[in-house]
Length: 71
Image 1: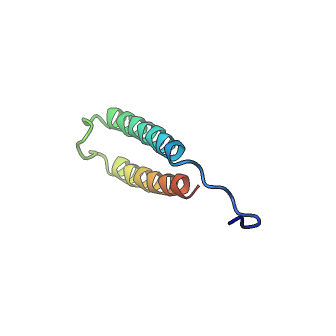
Image 2 (image 1 turned 45 degrees about the vertical axis):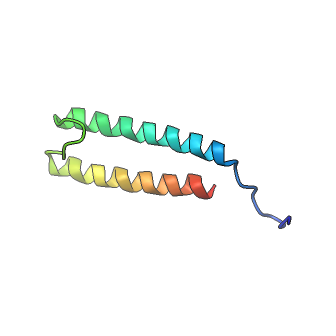
């Protein structure tokens, strides 16, 4: 069925590729934050402001992932 004005969905393999690229980018940002904070990747952040920034980064990740999945 063709609905007037509806956007075509992107192919699932394109969505998966985009999600993988997004995940890699967010992981890189998280690693940089750990380096600046002086903590190892996988540990909690030591500075309260960095913990808050990380929480915002995780929120941004969820919003971006949702946008890609909904296309």
